[in-house]
Length: 482
Image (cartoon, rainbow, N blue to C red; front, side):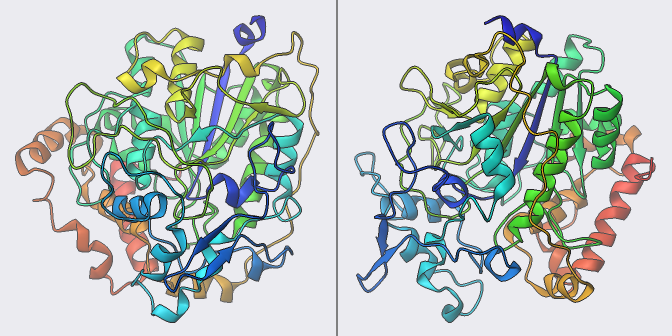
């Protein structure tokens, strides 16, 4: 399509841990054209009682952090959610009926806190007006799956590298992670202004040691606003949300973080691009790394393993649970529901396939992105006539100092602990990158402190732990205030 040739900038905002049904299941009535919630869906609890999908139905802060506590998201948890057992066989059917029972067996917090129906909750379009408006104005895919039924790190690895390199959970760590990335493709081809990663506090992309020699490409999110307004966006912009309640509340939407803050980030990213000079040349993708234990009713299909070399205990031959995916461009026909033309669904490696095609970045990074459908078909208009709203606003919410203080008392989730672990394993300065990678290779990634206990070293004090992480990043970047 001719419109595809007009795309000069691809922007991806990847949020955290929400299923399609959780965020967009009631965007429209369920039909053959839109596979959302019919409101007849349910799961059994551990006593065999039926627990139905539901919504609290208002935009008050107390309704915007469900589920609370955080559901399970280990590979074994997700197996149980999908198959009803933590150890499915190759012939096990994906019943999607283990979400409630898995939630009830979590042990991070007292058992009485895991109220059965919390993982069956969904948000109404009125509660999440920004992502809902964009989904209706442009395109939404009801056939976009997480790349694997796994935690955050594996799925974020897929969007950057086309593989999780055989690792199904965030931990234990396996530094250095040396998978070739799509960012390195831009470097290899000497693409001017090829890419930037815009972040808020601690970018998960720093797990990938192939990016350590390119620290100048990591910029604070405020610079995204500036680049969008000045028409200086890179060809590929990847946005990471705020993951920690440090100086501000998290806006990643990871349960039980307040969903409205993520909505404000989505609105800000859209407004920045929409009102900048690159609007007619930009494709904006808003998606989520994985479902985070939140209910979805669509069984994940089989997937092409990323490598010819089998991995255990999981060969990455199944997709993960569906996640929201909203695609935005003035070349998209209003009200598009995007589905692939073949049996292979969209997943995070569709972003890689689109980038390689759009910017001529060469061969696939893995067998997975080699078969992934790209996003060219969504650009169905010959001219950029779907201008979209000039500005979007999320529901009003501003955290008070007491809100922030309470958030800092919540136990760190597994992803936050893994990021503190990451910060402790980074090189001490930009000049020591190659030697540090070699040291990590020799040590198997475990000899540079016992970083899995970094968070515990601060007695669970998020402020102190984040201060230590910031100091580490300050040393590495030279100055985070640039």
